[in-house]
Image (cartoon, rainbow, N blue to C red; front, side):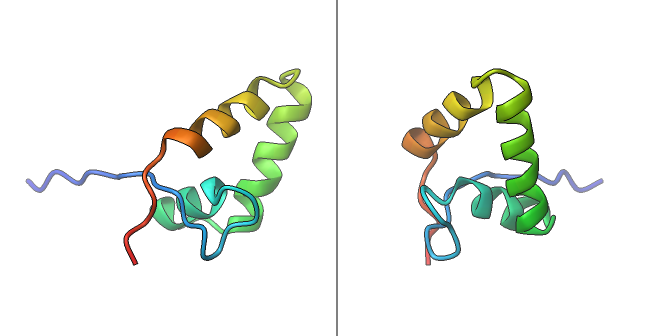
Length: 66
């Protein structure tokens, strides 16, 4: 049995601000627009919790190796 690990990173090449959503989209294979819409909706409905999560991920996630 092969254990598959998923690493999340920033991808500034395809990203808009920090590249967090682009990195998550690359890692999961989900379309980047869906990830962005999910983050925006979550930030609106969570009362800025996901906004701060995005900022923290933008600071601490490693950059994608080109």
